[in-house]
Length: 109
Image (cartoon, rainbow, N blue to C red; front, side, top):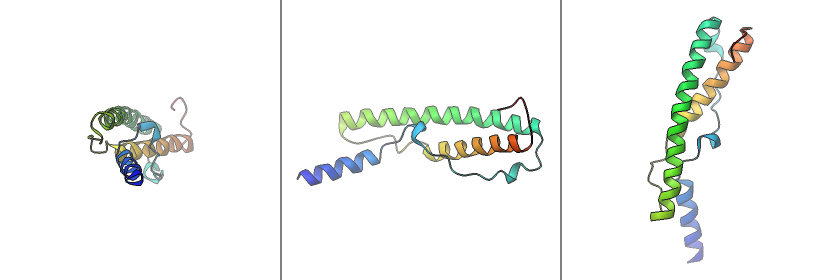
């Protein structure tokens, strides 16, 4: 019985949405930005930063909700959050930062 409870608890916790800070970036190639100028790269970076902030907030809300639901009713209810979007946008953010550096763009992050 103890093994069953341990396995069930582990399974339920693994179904919980992680916090955005715990989600790893997906590697994204910078080649899509080869022909972009610094202004376009900067605009795209601002867009990706804003989108990442939004989905990170959504993911953190889902993780907090899951933690509460596991405590109250014994299982997560968020459906896993939006961790794939967080991972993709984190990868885009890194790719854009690398593209900005490789293009020699200054004054932008």
